[in-house]
Amino acid sequence: MVNLLGSMLVLYCWVVAAILIFFLLLIGRFYEVRFHQRSYCQLMLVPILAYVLAAVGDAFLVNDDWGNPLLDFVGEIWPDLLFLVGGLVLAVSCYSLFRMMMGSRK
Image (cartoon, rainbow, N blue to C red; front, top):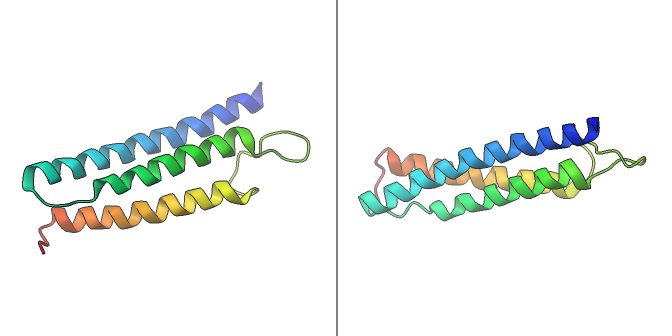
């Protein structure tokens, strides 16, 4: 029961982070429509999917030798790689959105 509760808490935290990233996607879409500038807001879907998939993997699929969930950032490599890729794409797309919002037009 405690393992399930811990897994659900890990999943809940990363889903909340994905929802916040979705709001960044909506802000980028608003700037595309309103100011007719390309913001590449579709790139925000990559971290959303990567974070949710990695959270599901971390919470339910990655187990230790006794079958208990690890519930940390150390263990299997594929959830960590998904977090890394999602974070890098998020950083690049947020910087691009920031530059567009602050008026650096090309």
